[in-house]
Amino acid sequence: MHIEIDQDRCCASGQCVLTADDIFDQRDEDGVVTLLDDAPGDADAQARAEEAAALCPAGAITVRA
Ligand code: SF4
Image (cartoon, rainbow, N blue to C red):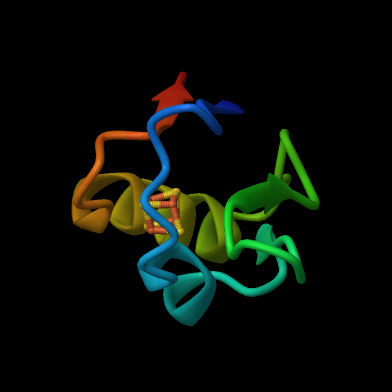
């Protein structure tokens, strides 16, 4: 699995951090997403990354197999 984020699309909603705070974080200054782990190894983290991508209202998270 490989995760990509598009900070230009992110609207700082924070859904991804609520879903997977070991993978996503938000910048202190404006809440825009940052990536803590672009290739989580365990199945639980991968499932949460996929859930975060599905929940993101801005379509700013892409998960590739
Ligand atoms: S869920 Fe999407 S829009 Fe919200 S902070 Fe995360 S990447 Fe940005």
